[in-house]
Image (cartoon, rainbow, N blue to C red; front, side, top):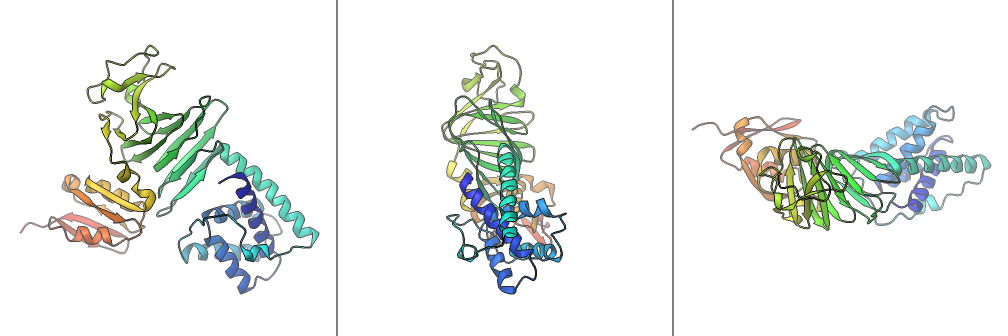
Length: 362
């Protein structure tokens, strides 16, 4: 989100903070505040930032407990969705705070919170919960789209733009800046780009990199060893496609991927780059789960990003069971119903899990 939008949302959050802590909160105000929270994840985040600044202040009394309850209710009553614009809601625009104390307090809260936002843009952690997706605009103009249950750490300096993918899957739209390389670190690999679009999926034990546009250099841990600069690496392992192996100017060898290519990396090996179904790789941005002969364990992991009632594969022999199909990430029953219909599987549901076993022998 751009700076002016951040400032406006912080102003709204500060206004709500003052309103909710000046005395008895009416049902109408509670409902308006709930609607404002549910309008965008950024509203929730901005209010929590304001609240955190003052949570120990004497100003907060019983109203603070009411606010926490309202936030919980707003999250529970429906999906928080990002609206198409950040214009101030009419319920907020119509308010006029005339007392000097209210105006001064709201203004001071905005100034402090803006400082927090700037710091977070330079060095911050962003995450999504189960079933939540969000898009962020970074300080350099690049955008990152986080899949459900994902977490990244952003660290920008004058020399480098660094992102640590700590968990989950992210689609990166990188703004060109030849003076500051954009580097994503994810488990067994680092991905270096200047101006491009690519997807990085950090799974259990492996990382999948898919290039949507442009080119990226993938630097697997297995190739992080000294080499002469600007040379082709002809000693690369047989599973790593030596025809495109390269050496970065800093002396680090890696693989060059172009648009439409994909590579899978583990701590021990690097797959040959393959032509990817890019639309399927980023289908999650449209809330779709696409599987093409995908192992059941991987299918379960992807499903569990979006639903609290988890699929758990109990039978180890099912690791080689392959699944193909397209499912809505919003529909918790479609994939489960599909698995129930498979003759080689036994599905048992509890209150918290969907357990998958092999079918009993006949």
